[in-house]
Length: 391
Ligand code: FAD
Ligand code: UDP
Image (cartoon, rainbow, N blue to C red; front, top):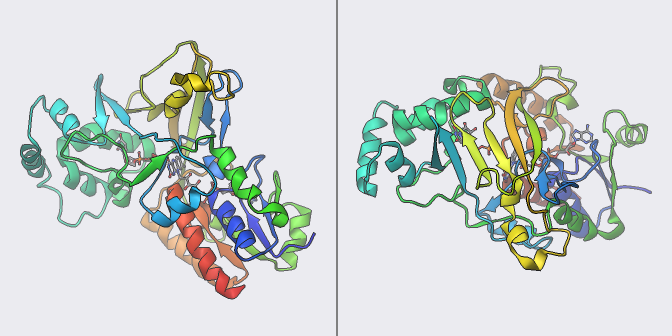
């Protein structure tokens, strides 16, 4: 079959581009992935022993305030009304996250009103500069030194193994700070999980394209002989793999953090009582534990699901302990470390990319960006609009 466009990577960026290219521009698309499944890092699978949906590459919660993205994704899946809540353990005590009035009052054993808490935290944040330049300064300016030391400093040290002074302030700006008792983890207008799981959502995107899109799994862009022919023919390509790999690491490797995800099936109904428990201290070494059944309470508590594929076995649960680790070639790249040195190397690769006009780099690996799912989709929709002019 003849193709108009090759897409490298069946993650959210690649899938969104494939869907738009096929359904809006009428193009014939070949989408390849070196893994044996679609969905990239958002992929999940139903654990065969317990029936619990487990997110293979770390927990993924969908949330967005981008109306165009919300409308787009709702064409392919319905979302549950799941609202993400996270707790953290510090010094043997459990606190709610993100930092809110509940956290502040529990930590200081106080009963501050919102205004009193603001005054207290402003006093403790006074040492931070007005224009924070790194994660430490940003964190202290947001929540003051004592809360930073308790909840951010050591967690960030475990997560990034890079001094907070060398990390971008953007990383911590993701977390809201609230002077009320609202402990929703995200601030966004829309939130939920795909009702039938992530794979069903992504398959529905592909199904909508009919025979315009062909998917080939376990196919590596750099080694597959068929793909080599398409490369030689200079087919228009959307590349969502790592940009430094594309250019043979000629300016060096971009730094990533990787993860070890240690899965365990336990013979208890409820291990921790919440979906995610963070561990704010240097011990234990893991940053957090995910307990996946809590992501879909509608499947466990609703008798309507009793005889369906979504009825997790009672008396069992699946947990995943998440450890952060330094990335080495061959490990999964998860979080871009994004130091000033990385940004300089990235700029050199991006300069080369401007000369490769038949290759479009996109997604978190292709752009070396810390994109949430909605931002990935938004970036793909915008890139498609730009490309449409050329097609
Ligand atoms: P990916 O999903 O990584 O897809 C890229 C694909 O390209 C991969 O499948 C890869 O196998 C393939 N590929 C690479 N090289 C080649 C090659 N040479 N040949 C063929 N195929 C190749 N976002 C949220 O909104 N909410 C969350 O809760 C959330 N949690 C996250 C937790 C973790 C641990 C991480 C790391 C990210 C999280 N994200 C979350 C972000 C989310 O994962 C990304 O926004 C999304 O996966 C980006 O999609 P992508 O298509 O750019 O990349
Ligand atoms: N963070 C922290 N303590 C926490 C949670 C988060 O210090 O209990 C910091 C940490 O640096 C982390 C960043 O805030 O990398 C962003 O947190 P988020 O939960 O958004 O990270 P993700 O889910 O993307 O790993």
